[in-house]
Image (cartoon, rainbow, N blue to C red):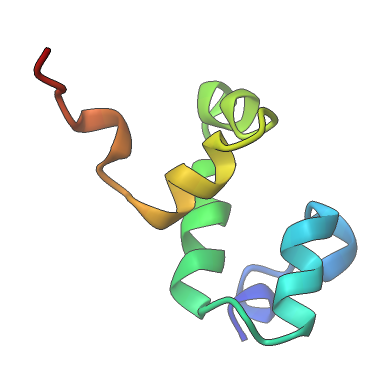
Amino acid sequence: MVLAEAERSLKNLPKDLAAAIEARRVLGTVVSRFLELEKSPVLRWLMQFGGFKERLLADDLFLAKGYES
């Protein structure tokens, strides 16, 4: 439903995300977050690297968190 509202199709998504959507293993909120993150050139670039896409989709505050040493 989220893809229909955004006028997107599975063909326009990364293969792993499209497969997860087809298998119904991904919530609509995750798809919405992906579509929002994709609007930013920097975040779109970061999502190309292994682990970043999954982390950004799982935790919307990932980039805002500080880490103590």
